[in-house]
Image (tube, rainbow, N blue to C red; front, top):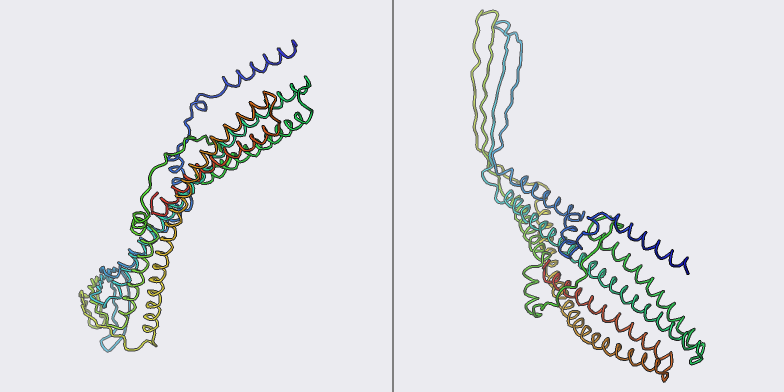
Length: 433
């Protein structure tokens, strides 16, 4: 007796010391909200980093495609010394020549402007890809977040099941000891306790797995502690199917990306067709000569003068082995493929919205029905326990009622989680974060 009391006191003392040793920051650490989890994921996700880099690369291609439209200026400095002998005698020339040349494209019938338009369209397509990646990351965080909440609530359910099973075992044992109930009731209650322990172990492992999944979605260490706010979002109203469809066609980044890809293909076709036509450009240069020409026979020296030149050129492609024709054929096929892909994508978007609405309607119905079933299962459990305690019911009635109650609680939690996921997936189908 005294040994048990001493053990309890020591345990309380150790627990109190452990609690006091916890740093204040750990005790006061706020639970992670869904918004905070999303912010963390957007800051850490490597796919987003790659998508942002792709946008930057496409911006660089736009600058390159614009470059031929601007003046091309080149400067050079050269020093030379030469000696020659002719009828006038030996001549020595020393020269330092500084030159500045410039060229400007005047018109090339759409080749350069088509390439620039294609580069800009590809940049917009890349931005659409970035937004799509952002929305995918947000959806993955929402899925992991809600799964973690439901997993933690399952633990609470299994803990309540274990407590109830242990109470049944205690009661059945007491009845058996006084000869009111058979040994069968005790063994049945022991099986119920073991099943509850097994369910609790599975539920706790699912919490661990769901936390690892959530951490991975946030881009942090899978083993990092992550306490979350366990409140589920309100069951907000969502737009009708027609409104959702219009919003999806207007807002989905994949459609904006496909539109940009069609425009890029159209501009590439323009550039390819421009290869049939002439190119008009202007060039000019000016050279500063600093040096002398020394003639030994004449005994004289002469200064070298500056020079300049300017010209406007017209380059006409007469025949290049059908290369331009092949480029045009390729660009026409690419445009047709891009248009077909866009139409196919629109069909896929409509499918996503319709499926998301169907799943949302089903989830709402299941929430209502499972909540009703849970209420009835609790009533049946109370009746079975009352009958058993009064000595007019069998233990099997209690275990059956408990099994039904656990299933009803599980179904109700699953339906709540599925409702949140259905809302999140409909928002993603509509192009919302």
